[in-house]
Image (tube, rainbow, N blue to C red):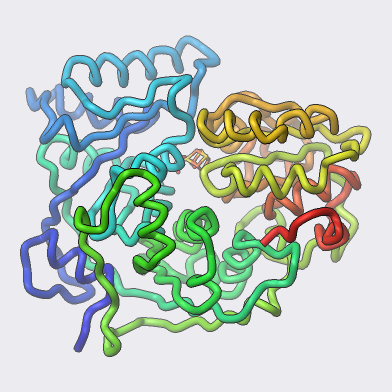
Length: 428
Ligand SMILES: CC(C)[C@H](C(=O)O)[C@@H](O)C(=O)O
Ligand code: SF4
């Protein structure tokens, strides 16, 4: 029996010929990503045990992103804790406020995480980096502490779900719609503890930004991670970041690899999809009901990239956001913010009546800079719409693509972005 990409990576990094699903392994971590929310608890565990060191200061990437710039004293102290540890341990890759952004998106653009490697972090969307052909997953604070100290982590080898996406999407339908459709079909626990491996000619034709959106949301189906095999798109993306093919190992799944489940998606049939409250699997076709919105949010590690901002600008250019709607646009990183400024996108957003915020997680999880009040209704390009996720528990959150968020902000109610298909380039 052959092996999947994920099994091959886990075998290699645990020093074995082969591994099988269900097996417990001790796996080397090539990278540990640290932000200011979960890292302080892991550091306290280490300090209490007199284990205050790191396995390799050149293999840890630290990016404060959730509660920055600090909105209160508690947040300021968490930031200080991360920063003082970075200084004390000589952590080499520190992306401070103003030089970073949302950790997952900062990391994907550094060229540090390479195909065939392993990455852990105390954050559930670490699966994002799986689009690079790496095994990347979120862990709890205890495992994070172990990874920081020893560069190792225990895993139960996951089973793999194969998701084959074929054909082309209609204009106005984006990778976010594809992933919301898959989660709608399989359920929020449909890929529990599985690797979601994306294949098919739709994936082959997809750029890296779209692939990150797909792997980012694996956790929303309960997945251990998402993964895409390396191809020319991956190689070119890495080459642009100064990483040559000789610097990494490419794994491909064997033809006779064992998959727990195979899901087939015809991209041409996927509609602009909106996940209704309060679970990401509650997908319906955009605009199938008239849902008035008070807030529109474009940002997060799922959809705060430059292609997302271009999709939004295409719809907002020359238009105004509906009265009574508050829209915020949050470029995911400083680099994306700058690119959006250079392309004139920020001006389009401001002219339409949107606020442009600094790169952070703030609004995505209701921490700051866009917290929802009682009964607010938000259309969001993020990944989670649980009760209380963005603020008050009575607020309603609808998840959608950036294009759908923009179309809804203009109309004042949830709308199908295909109405704007004649406005410039297609959104796929
Ligand atoms: C704060 C952090 C632990 C959390 C996560 O792990 O996902 C956050 O990023 C989120 O999206 O809810
Ligand atoms: S952008 Fe949102 S989902 Fe992503 S890491 Fe930050 S809080 Fe979590």
